[in-house]
Amino acid sequence: MKGPAGVGHLFDVAFVCTGNRARSPLAEALFRRSTAGLEVQVASFGTLGIEGAPGLPDAIRAARRLDIDLSGHRATRLHDGCLRSCDLVLGFEWDHVAAAVMEGGASPARTFLLGEFAMLIIDSPLEPDRRYARARTIVALADSRRVRTRPDTTLSIEDPVGRPSRFMDMVVTEIDRLVEVTSHLLFSPRPLP
Image (cartoon, rainbow, N blue to C red; front, side, top):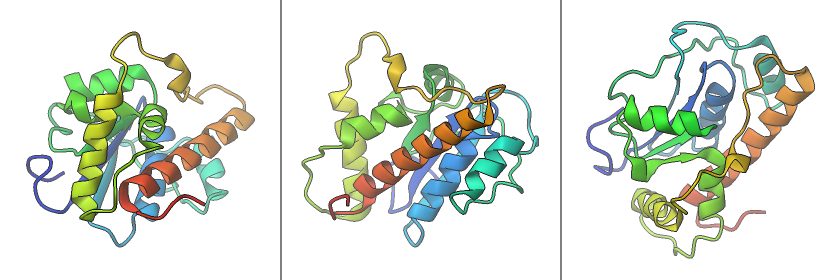
């Protein structure tokens, strides 16, 4: 992660889930692929202290469907202040968002659920602009559109651990869709197909 958020062209994105063994590493790999060639830095973290654990076998299998190889992934634990410089932090459940802010030092104004963020920016009226400035403006716009009441749990992507393989397949499909929408709307002035 770089210096203070919003400085320079590099755009920092981090994904946070529970173990950093399925949802966040998949989102990281998909986002990295969809922003290849751009000055975008992507990372992922887990809220549990299982540093170095491999990806879940079901996650590795399901990711292969999308031509993503998670076999070499090792879990990274969320640690104090590691998200302070991020331009955008995306979690999968509300406790990930809270941990990103409280433990990781992420700005609350730049920390969202993946599903929440995609919903908030889907009809962004912004015209194409300098690519990274536009992306930061979209993040600020999403923050201004939030309803700051009780969290909407329907926007969460549940933990697939201990669930049948078909549940992992559904999670992978949903993360793929949301990452595609998010990366496209942040960095491409063209409409979605």
